Amino acid sequence: MKSCPNLPYCGWFTFAIPWCYDKSYVQVTPLTTENLLGDTAKRFFNYNFGVHLGEGTSQRIIYNVDHIACAEMCLTSASGPAQVRCLSFDFYAFPYLRTPEEIEGNGVCVLNTDNSDTGRLRNVDEGYTDEELYALPSDAGHFRHRSDPFTGYYEVRDPRGGSIASQLDYPGDADDLNAITVWAGSRWGVAHYQLDYVPPQGYTCNLNTGGVSYNESYVPPTPLTFTAGYTPVLRNQHCPGLVAKADAAALCASTGGFLCPNQATVRLLNGRKLGCSYDGFPMWAASDSPNNPNQKFVRCCAAYKDVDNCDALYSQSNLDFCSQFTTFHNCVTYGSGYQRQFSLGFGVRLQQYRNDCANYGQCTNVVKQDYAWRDRCVWCLEPGVGGGYCRAGNQLGVCASSDTASQVRFAANVANTCGAEATCRVVAEYPDLCNNFPGVC
Image 1 (cartoon, rainbow, N blue to C red):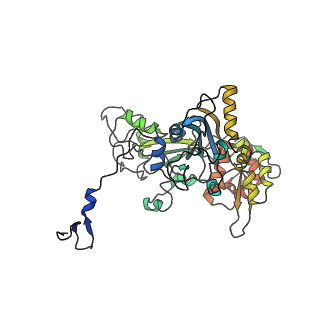
Image 2: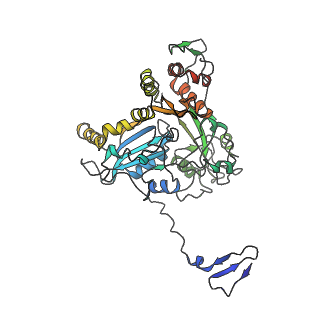
């Protein structure tokens, strides 16, 4: 290294690399630290940037809240009664106020899940979005934070997706059944350490009728539950460092998780590359005394389940409904949220919510739809053929041409969340999926 007095802009340069440190950089003012009490929704977007594929295959819709509350509900959704993980949110501001209860800045909040599973084109790319349900395009519309083509869409970014997965040397393990490892408010997403999955047993399916034959070993399945761990970050995106037990619990709760039950569970998260380099250091568990020591590092646990739309998606009527479509256009148009946009567009749905407010008093922070399905059919491509076929549901695993992991994930969802009768209807309708349901065909 050598100084360079003859170059006024240069502070020093190296012999090995002909690069000069520019003195002008010293004069640059650092970026202002974000106001920690600022807008949760903007923080959500700044640090978890991305766009989601479609508006979400299952949605929770809340009427008359602000965009900050919308973001916070998405962050903590897994700790709610339904234990559903929100992967993204949309917020549609009221274009104008029509009821005394509506407040300027409030609107309709839509929490999305399963949005990484369908892989269909974002409606915004086609010039038509769910914004039609709540406002005319020329009105306020989507909550916006950036002026680019992706405005209005917010997603919990998958930090293990693409090349970063190989950089982290992530092994997968229980994540093989659920590749979506995103978690809002975490350092590097979640690692699943437990999966309550029991293959279907105690019954067989009649592939001709879709009926079920039970035997004495039959035990009703329990819904599939994913248990995972993650390292939370502070609002300024820094690692928390040493904190008291109460602060650790509050940090986990604010990101939809909880303190892991005991130290044995905490140790399961070591070696998972969850960020902040906490492996081997003392970390809080729910069973720990808050004293002695009174400060430790924090990692959180979380548990969530699949959305239960079994009666609607895998009923015989919906299987028949989706099977009638032989073209991509009809399958996607009539089997997805497009149909809802056609019938409830130009603010018709918003007017329905306002009518409910006037007639029934359902006016503020009202859940209008609780993770109900948006898409009821999925188009399955046939690689190398150029065609495809339409099937029921909203998971790509129902397609025989999908990858093995998606098919196993779909089978586990149907068998454990939906049960024997739905399973037998599905394999009777789609016998090419029988290998994914061992023992029932």
